[in-house]
Length: 450
Ligand code: PLZ
Image (cartoon, rainbow, N blue to C red):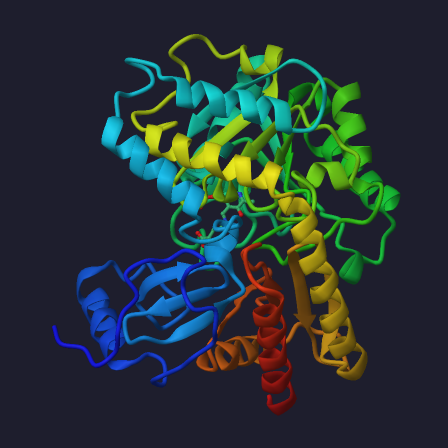
């Protein structure tokens, strides 16, 4: 296929760091691939940015037409260390040349063990921990529930309003939102119960009051003696970047400890420096019994984990946990390189610095524009919630229009929220200050015209 643009042959930070559109989006070559997608890929697999990517790194994603877009989404919180991070690339290349697979359940290898050791060391709490590796966040959540049930001999699991835990059968049951995640895909796994989440902007409750409400429901409708686990995202991701009120999470964790219930923090989206701490649980002073991770763990390679108290993790019998690819050596090599970057480049500090910019800029927009009802988040996980200024009702149409406008001008932003009225900002931590600022300038301009 001929081309009039020079395509980059590598991603990584070497890529020119600029917003630069040479066509309207989608450009002709992206359109061609999108047309082929429509013909060849199941309709259920959607996409929100109308480009076909060929390279990414630093703070940009480049498409097949030569357009360079500012990345404020990190492929949904995955490329936290940066896309095609040089250390990750080198580790994967080296590992690929040695061996690509043995199946850890057949012949173990050191890389998996080293990732487990790193997770045991980095996750909150000084107690003895163990880990098991999987391929996706949903798979990690499934396994955390399996382990909690085996350890407690109980079956019920509590998840929260606005929760997102995945697209497999059990994790669909745990996920709150029907469209698009669940509608028509039932019946769902049983023994899953839903409790009210602390959502300060909408419930106005203190953390203690919100926890009392949730715990009363749990005690009356389920009973602690039947409850294996409570699972919660310390800051909810897909549900709207909802930060619970202070005291909510500690009250839940304390109640779980007193009642022999396994407290699972789903840090698939919040983990690995995203929120300005290595794990968001640290921000709220909680020490989960089990913690699920994925996304940012391996710089874009598919890897997920359950990490937690050794005695709980060891409750599952030998052979009870696993999977063909879980802890694949390429993914583990990538994770070790990414973890090295998280620790040695102090990426939590970079996330906090990005968070300061996001909160300040979005706060200023909010002060001047009553359509922004709330700005919230921690570190490089910040969102703006759009409302009808008169009623406070969610404004999904405005949200969609603003997101679409930003993308058309070359800034990748993602929406989220039960009501579809939240724009979330979760840039790669490798983004430069100039690009971050330019992305927010574009947002301000689009919003002013919307
Ligand atoms: N738990 C907290 O955020 C994935 C899903 C995007 P997988 N979130 C992005 C989509 O529309 O599919 C997620 C999460 C939390 C679990 C998961 C699931 O992780 O790796 O997508 O299975």
